[in-house]
Image 1: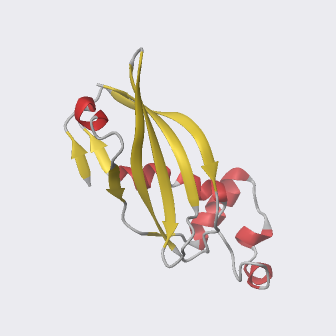
Image 2: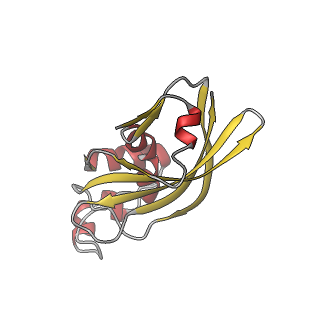
Length: 150
């Protein structure tokens, strides 16, 4: 994990690859819980028998479940100390180029792409790419925006 002492040190890393998270297995229990929380029970996520005969050879994680893993994954990549607050400000773009099979391991890599001063602090624009162990295409590419106030 990369640790920055303050917002100024973090913003000085503009343009840099910040690192990678640990690998995390995506379980059927997570997928089922996400399906229950969102009422998205599409068969490719929760019906083991039907999904086994489907296009992916088994169940896959919801794209939005993959996206929802961003906080836990990015928390393992870097930390900025001496903050008053850090707030998820939103997303500029999200794509899901490849599925995440249940049982697969994912990890994220992050690059700090830009930093803009705003009234209360810095808007930090990062590209986060979620990889699937053993797959060449990423599962998710998200351009995130975080508000950091020092």
